[in-house]
Image 1 (cartoon, rainbow, N blue to C red):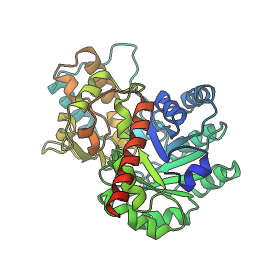
Image 2: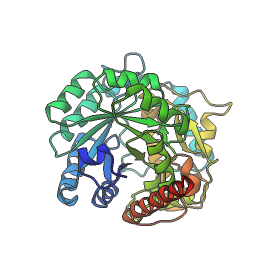
Image 3: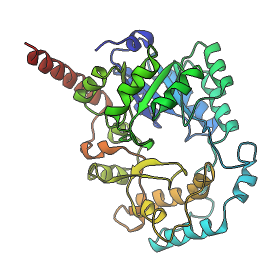
Length: 373
């Protein structure tokens, strides 16, 4: 199983794990994989706290940081202030959000309780702030989603001897990333959770491997077992990029009510919807996603306006789910998740998940060896 990325990063297994939870990142890296912390959910100040914690608790193991610097934003958004961006949100969208929440009995936030920060790293300035914070720590990889990272970010990372990875959904996107100086390509199939394209992992991975050789490629999308990891390496990948499978591990900070919904979901219970960010992102199908795709929807807004418009609504949904997991309001609360939702039916330590994947991989290789004799 040892690939050149294992040698490059000093890891035992080529299993890269994306998570917004620092405990998951630390657990995966300490188990021999490579944890990657999603920075989008944090302000620069909070990201500093999270990375300082990782530096102290990861036992010297390598880890990375994932940022989001979208290549395409709403017209005029790149240089706009937060108040200017908020002014771009039409009243009909605000009214639709409130009417949908009212339909399911989602109460407003209590007085004095703030909702989720609505801007964070969606703009160039926010993304650059996350990069500045990340590179002050002993990170071993910087990852960018949603388009090629800006040239100055690639150069900044390389000055710190930090390689850059990026997610793609097509061979054409992969070639643009390599041309931008990206070192590692993550071929993300449509099965994946979060922002994803339309090409399946099995089809996308070999196309990207061939397009960018000799640059290393990680296969992503619908991978949660050692058998799938063996298939990814057979397709030419140097490892796997995983995300959804860590939502239900013991270390995850996903709300318990949502964890239970995930564990009862099938692989057909996810949908690629623009409801969360304005770009197609695979997530758990809920009445909220259905409302945005329904006939009464005013249509979603371009980045970063859609998330800004809905950020407080998500805070209210999650708060309602925590208060009463069986309430109609709680049914709105979902999460970005891939089609492997149908395979996530237990809560186990991340270390056990890693070791099971390795055992399954070994069994798959032995089976293939036997077939060739």
